[in-house]
Length: 230
Length: 74
Image (cartoon, rainbow over all chains, first blue to last red; front, side, top):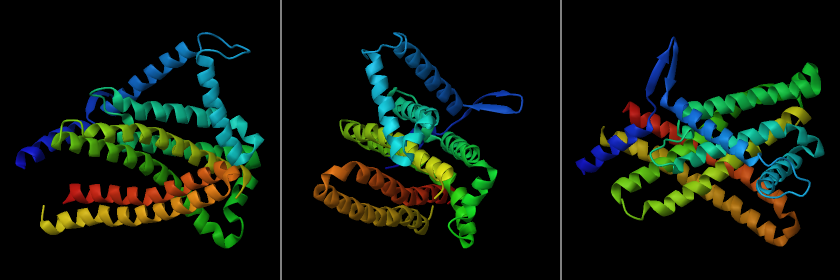
């Protein structure tokens, strides 16, 4: 029993971020390095996929990219109609980035950046601030403030509370799911190292897709409430 | 770590997980029912269902984070 607990502690220590180097007051942690690795891979992949140029009749990688874009257009149009298409840049980059970070789990020995709450908190705060900025841009500052007192003035504290809770729930949802999944697989791998962790890892693959999808879906919904009122 | 502390951590994750699993099951079964009754509206229902499930899931995850905090502070 003690051996297992010790083993577990060793493996769990591997999951926690550590400081790599200091540049003045800024500390670069292992999570940041991992995020950079994911970003480099993503940039390289995008460069390779778009190398062929644009074809009127899609072929090769363009089919794949068009499928992705159609899927995201579907999400946006479901939330705010034809008008929503112009927000593709927010939703699309979030989806691709989070998906890449979640699936980086399958690189052996790699700790996915989304198992660190700092990454997800940064993503969530950026997203919520962006939705507010888009709301102000779309409806002017007056209309944006009017959002808080609609439908009636009594709802003001509720609306403010909702805006504060949004980034927390986004961050903790992504972090909790990815970290929980990773922890379960780790514990299973320590207890039964053969075969048993594989189906749970398959579930992790599905979870990576679903969490990226949920994050973008909620971003769409928040964008819709900010830009089109309640 | 005391036995009472262990129980506190275990219950902090177990009870919310149980209740949110029940509520998710209820929501999903209702959505499935209406999807099979009206297959042409299945797309809208799936989106609404996923958003609802995400909100229910969030409660479990909050308690998961609280359980981790409890565990590390004990």
